[in-house]
Length: 191
Image (cartoon, rainbow, N blue to C red; front, side, top):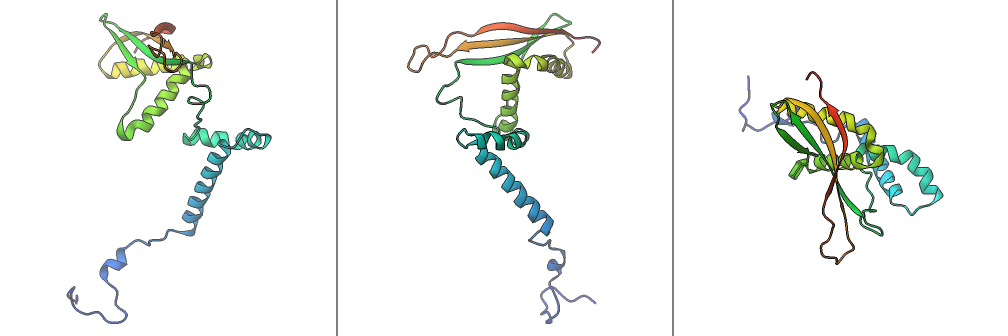
């Protein structure tokens, strides 16, 4: 026999809702894991921001892979004391079987997807750097696949490095015009 909800309870009875409520405090393993995560993250970030020294160099050997994995590998070198001298973009120009030419910039995001967009921006910077040559073919293949998903029939993908030299602060204009340089061309086969 069920007792009505608003009937008084005896000293050993519990509310039906309490039987199904999750515990507010997780297991001790979960607490330990969270503590380790926070501690390692703080240690890595603090190590990254230490003044240059032999100790920092040694600690960064262990911290750098973790910082790269978590996306915390940030530096302030683009701002001070020597800001970048160039603004660089990589564009992918796709030539389609019907003769159309479509330009695909590096994907970006706004709002919640901004973090995702920032990672793409960093990937674009890697493509534009001298050591980025190993990334050109995989990126061109990815762009061809994305163009195909949009309904295109890509036959050739050309990666273009677009560069503008930044002028000193207070200059007018603030930068020189962009100059394009094709850095990689791939023929799309059998897609």
